[in-house]
Length: 198
Image (tube, rainbow, N blue to C red):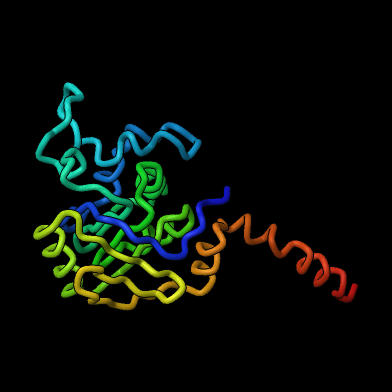
């Protein structure tokens, strides 16, 4: 399944400064029954967003109209816990295209890259700058430039570089998942196979 191409994203951001957010908090296990990657955004952070009677918890950041955007800024160790890929599906389906944190759990990071969400790991100091900038002005814009691998606070110009594998970077720029990538090089694979000695 192809995803939106990701080159440069400029957006406001939603701050979630909680550390050690695990995948069960991102998408509780009781919502993992679906097999298609749609509808999971409705239950992103379900137990933090809603009361038992399904009324919104007004003090939770996703229910606060002050904050919006396609970038989620999380606390350290975001996406820990089980390996459920549904957590990345929920982040994508809600509308986030980038998650920023000072540290990601490896499996969650890879699951994000597989579904078109860019995980940007920054230093703890830069993450703190981002949180402070959003607190001072919720309309603060952040620019994430994938080709240059930089994240920038637009108001001040402060920026930091981030790492990503060349393969995943190329896939995100082209909007490919792993199957799309293989389909794209199918002729090369066929040519290579035909040249193999029997």
